[in-house]
Length: 116
Image 1 (cartoon, helix red, strand yellow):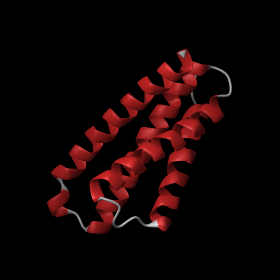
Image 2 (cartoon, helix red, strand yellow):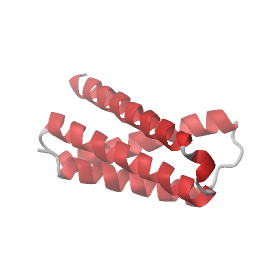
Image 3 (tube, rainbow, N blue to C red):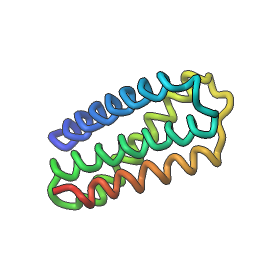
Image 4 (cartoon, helix red, strand yellow):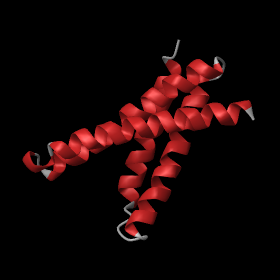
């Protein structure tokens, strides 16, 4: 139960970071091209999962890399559920999803690896 609470707190922190970064990106949306916006959104996911992996690795102390990767997987799954619910199942691109899960797992694992 204690592990689950730690993961949930870290996920909440990660999504707060994601929302803050997406709000900042939306302020500059008019002056940026679609490709730059896509890169910024992907970077926001990477920064959020890195930070979440860092926090979760610090909480767990052992197997930090595994916890970071697990955080990235859970983050991605929740992100997919939210995306499918908002888009009502349309426009789901497998290539983008594969890129996103790769970034989430890599950044979460890196955060876990570099946690103190």
